[in-house]
Image (cartoon, rainbow, N blue to C red; front, side, top):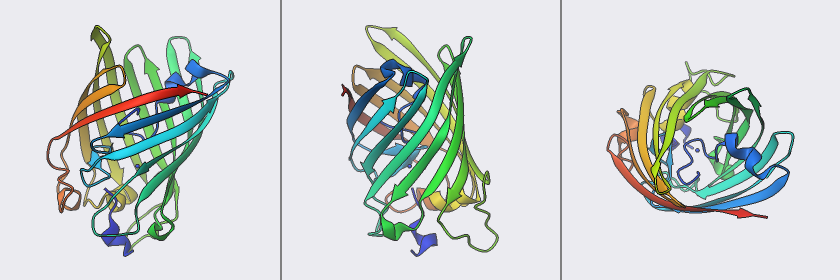
Length: 244
């Protein structure tokens, strides 16, 4: 949830990082691909981005044989009574590579919203995966948002750390476990929350279908109004990948 009040003026169906995990980018090495999805609720880092309403999402990606990738992704969003947010459009680029059994992913992601929002921002990230385990660290790189007194929106002054584990239980059914922590002045202003928070979820997927149970320890602004981010959320989604 973006905090529209403080301004006065964020898979891959659920996309906790707003784009598909680049560890798999070499699957379509040297090729263009696209993705499209429908979800009953757009959840980003445990928080609804659509006031618990449905979202239609999609993107286009290019991945080279070298491991370099670039892409774009978009979704409808809704943050309550404010009419300055209607869409999120992300642009990202990075490099995915392996060192032995460890897969690495480093890159930059820019979140773009309606012009009137004045809260666009970018993050740099590094991720590592081995077997079914993965970890990712996103840090604030830049933002057009104005700091209030006592706030610091400088490089690295906000971060999101996530840990994930995925495994298959048979018949093409996959289970995913996730925990994340979002903190820093910018994160608190962006989410409308008074402090950092943890989010966690469990997903069950087969084919393009995914069912997710998500929760947080959020208190305060991000839990108020129609957001209910302090309540357990149940989300159903369907996604398709398209080779171009």
